Image 1 (tube, protein in one colour):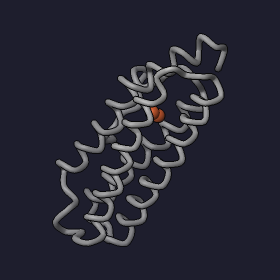
Image 2 (image 1 turned 120 degrees about the vertical axis):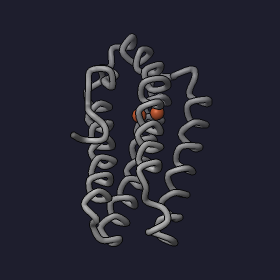
Image 3 (image 1 turned 90 degrees about the vertical axis):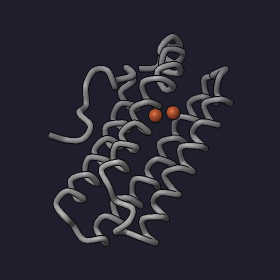
Image 4 (image 1 turned 180 degrees about the horizontal axis):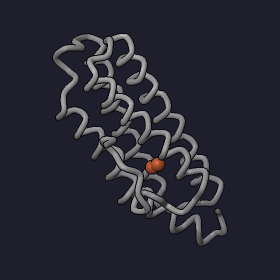
Length: 136
Ligand SMILES: [Fe+2]
Ligand SMILES: [Fe+2]
C-alpha cells in the first residue's frame, strides 16, 4: 500500500492542480518505497531533490493563478508556501549531509502531513475561489 493514497478528499476540483498534486503524492510515495527497499542513497537523494524542485514549481504555478484571478488571500498562502519550501529544502540538505541518520518512518509521516494538510486545508480555500471564477 502506498504511503499516501489518492482519494477524492485530496481533490480540489481543478484538473491541472489535481494532476500536480498527484505528482507530488507519487514522489513522496516513491521516496517511501525507495527507503523501505533499502535503495541507494544516490537514488533517495535524486527523488528527494526532485520533490523539492517540483514543490517549488507547483507553488509558483499556484501563485501565478492567484495573480491572474486576483485571489485575495494570496499573501497568507504564499507565506505558507515559503515555509513549506524551507522545510523540504532543509530536510533534503540534511539527508544529503547525513543519509543514514535522516531517512525514517517519522520523516515520511512528516512529509505525508506536510503535503496533505496543505492541500486539504489551504489549497481548498483558493480552489473554491478559482472555481467560482470559472476555472476548471
Ligand atoms: Fe498545491
Ligand atoms: Fe498551495
